[in-house]
Length: 295
Image 1 (spheres, one colour):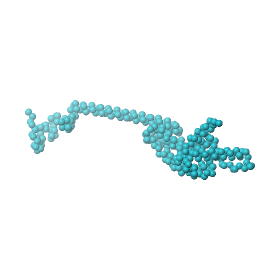
Image 2 (image 1 turned 90 degrees about the vertical axis):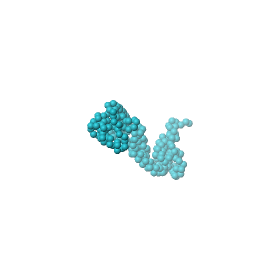
Image 3 (image 1 turned 180 degrees about the vertical axis):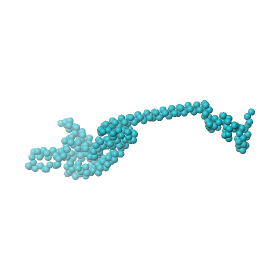
Image 4 (image 1 turned 45 degrees about the horizontal axis):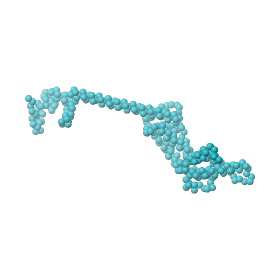
């Protein structure tokens, strides 16, 4: 006879129970209990072992005993099948399904505490660094909180919202202030929606600022080039002497020398450098030939 749809669903769920590992105990335990419940095999886990049957036992006692015995035997088979072989020797063979699960609980109690501490530390220290999308960051924090719930440490939605706010960088400071001023509390879905909108606003503002800065720098560079060309044309700026690869005199010096009223050598008025006695004396001292006189 083919199994009915509910039996097929139960068998499929029981087959999906993974083999127990040290860091998956909470998930494994939850799936085992759900699977046994769907298959209607958790009776032995919910009730104490009935007294042995006697000649005076009623038909109801017999039915309850048979139901418990069937539930206990099947539950043991399923749990033993879903744990590593080396774990099976740590539980007495005569243990009931409930005692078997309690023994597994004790073996993994320390691992559960360590996992809880690790997940809690991760949740309170998570920070959004701007990489990826903020929606993914919040969903990762929510998933971490769900794992803590499976370990019997429930994080409420209000607590998770505050932890998400703490994880946001200083670019969201104005957003945080806005949240603190509103009276209504946000659900996690509302928080995700508002954070996504704020992230888009910040990206748009950053793009506009970068465009403005680029335009300003380009305009300044263009204006500076025009000013330099204008100074060259008016004689206010002297191009470098390419033959000597040195820069010429400054615009101020050029003005004085061009005017003919100030000596470029001694800086005195009334003569030019070629007529300067101090300049001629300096050349003799340096052993330089005299300056030829102009015709």
